[in-house]
Length: 275
Length: 308
Ligand SMILES: Nc1ncnc2c1ncn2[C@@H]1O[C@H](COP(=O)(O)OP(=O)(O)OP(=O)(O)O)[C@@H](O)[C@H]1O
Ligand SMILES: [Mg+2]
Image (cartoon, rainbow over all chains, first blue to last red; front, side, top):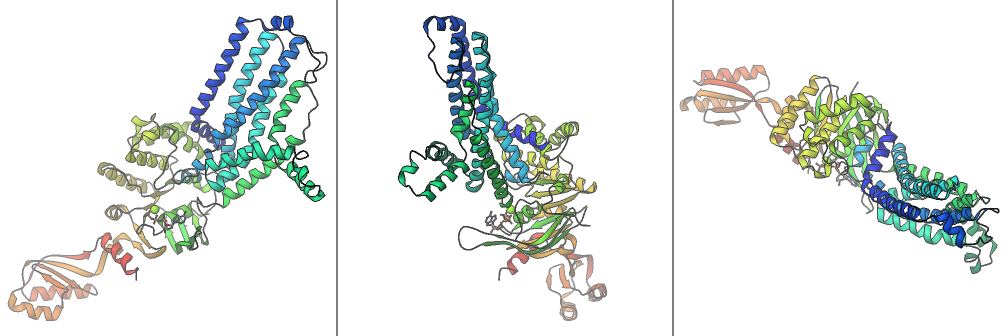
């Protein structure tokens, strides 16, 4: 009962941003529809292109399947990149403003535990990401399917991976938001993590290992890599699924584990706080 | 069973700077079911701190408290509590109707009952017209009215109000007082904070005065304001000057101001002796009343004597 109310509240708090995002997505969907209407993509493609042997396309794929695979791959990467970037911005202020004096009392005086309040906000933020990426991905998938006759449901996994990737990052944002009560510092730290620390850890063999050959040092770096979430690799999962390649699930479950720990820590911090 | 019961409730805020703020020290208080209880005190006395402790918004550093027989921190009991925070800020992106709908659901109210109750409460605070306007566009008093509607929404057994009449116009205040008395008639308990002592005096059954985190006085409003030992006798005719000195020697009044005599009496017997003496010395009595001090006088006295 209280979770749906909190989700509705969270969505309403970002109604304008969600509307703008859906509007932008609708614009691109419209553009794609126009392209599909004015050109006959499959025949134009088969007439002009010979299929290279590329490992992102399952062997034995027809030229048009190859094309759709390419487009899906690009769209998946783009969708997830934009979704994460934008949703971190949109959602970072939600907890700090819930915790503002005069507002937090209204929520906390209700028969609702603090853990549940956080859960409601968490689900609400995930709903924002799932809704916007879902709208765009399902739209694109439908348009491409109708135009080319190729229906690869694996593309829709971007909705899941984008939401999952955001979910893990959001648990970090919850801890930061509760500790600092500031949207700006939350955004800064999350972006530093996603665009600097995570890539460094991921490429530790190339970069970090060059610094020292010490085995302890290298083990610590490895450990850090396994502990911290792996946004890039979660996103890459969708591409692997689309391409029909084997998927490495380690980045997914290790990130989920990290997220669960962060969530618990956020609840712990929030429970103890005087508001 | 008490509506609110605290024993040695203490709260020290730890701040970044070295000195911690002791906002509440050892407050033991009892609020009985069905009464209107006022907590008074100067700015920074700890009134809001006390309320926030009761609702689990902040955690005590000492002592204990029970609300509606449940320990503070018991989330479920909040279903039966209505709370109006001081300087509350409703989410500005919600309309008045949405505020009540969302917080009503968070309060555990279900569908049909909630919907009919929302309309009722908005009408009660005369905000029906503004139901579909975002609260960002509300005036101060309108926000306060919505806050009251929100606090009353779940038909609470215990109503906790922090500065409830803040921002209300005179008509609104009058209606608010009537509302409180009406609620008390229905057996509800009301706990409120206010700086408007004339109002507190009119509606509260009992009050407590808090100063610098300590409880300095508490009791029923009537007992506190009605002084047992001081009476005011108004005369229709003065005691003739010739007898007056003699009378004063016997009765030793606090003051004689024209026709108004103020005197201390220990009991009823002494009061009657005073009246006899006035009559025997030629005074003609018009009325005798026990002296009443206003809550304001009492408050100032309690708060200043504690400063030293
Ligand atoms: N979050 C906090 N951190 C540190 N100190 C605080 C905090 N909240 C309140 N205080 C301090 O606790 C004391 C009591 O504050 P409180 O808000 O309870 O006063 P009050 O009686 O409600 O005053 P007012 O009549 O002005 O509303 C004050 O000295 C205040 O500075
Ligand atoms: Mg206060």
